[in-house]
Image 1 (cartoon, one colour):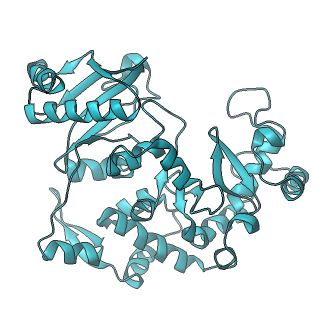
Image 2 (image 1 turned 90 degrees about the horizontal axis):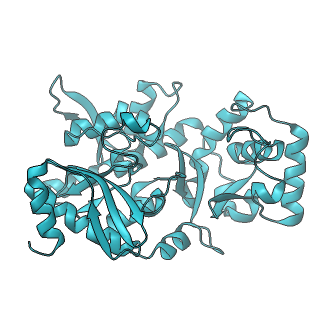
Image 3 (image 1 turned 135 degrees about the vertical axis):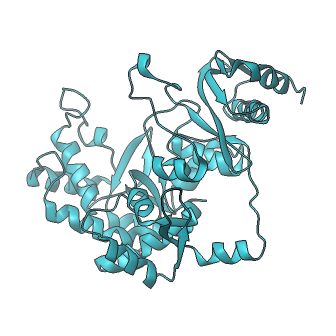
Length: 363
């Protein structure tokens, strides 16, 4: 699944589960959460690493060389937003060499005593080493990054490869288009969070070199030039049809990362409101889009109260979607160990009976 998607975003918010667990759940069903964690962070054979893609993401281990352009850019810039102490970097590296993999807490503490962004000197140093590839993260423990020396955790053939910037861009563009199926330049910029240095001409050249197919997307305003995965086009031309789950999606799922693309493809406006003042929220703190039949047909803001999954607010666009939400909520509740589902607010109100009936197993 990780290779298919090319990146799975990490985030601190945990409602039903953390987002990197919700992504495989949405695609694979009620796979055990311990199995998901073990697949990402295998204790002896790393299959993934963490780095900056769309955001902080879990990435396939074989993609390590192709983030070297990003690492080089960070080194050339000199720092992110904290001033980096070379002495602290040397001390952190020495600790990693002598003591093995360590978290920021084990290195001396992540906080300097102020607000959450007020990092300690060792945390700044560890993050700088992580950003530049001088340290690597192939495991998290208790949500904390575990920093290690790349030569201990990245296979030599990957660690020693240093593709140039054009090769890195070509690889990442191809991986993103395989994940998306079809993408405009703007889609690729958002999906990969490409810097301004990667011009439209560079993106087009990367797509061409990667063997992607140029296509045109029909849009309401004007046709949009785009690139498609040739295998996806061949599958469609052979009569392929998708097999769709009915499920709730993490707000950080790559299917809905890009608000403009989500609106264009699904006619669905998605926004995370966790950081919006409570009285200004429209759909709730962690509203999860409802995927059914390959469409986004509603959303629900879940919470847990003991062994009850509570939908603080739910919105659907049809009776079929209401029934689908009932099935999706029941499955999600079981997956996280809840044995009941309740709803506080349902819109539109006239579709609430369809939801209630389906929740009881009526249809």
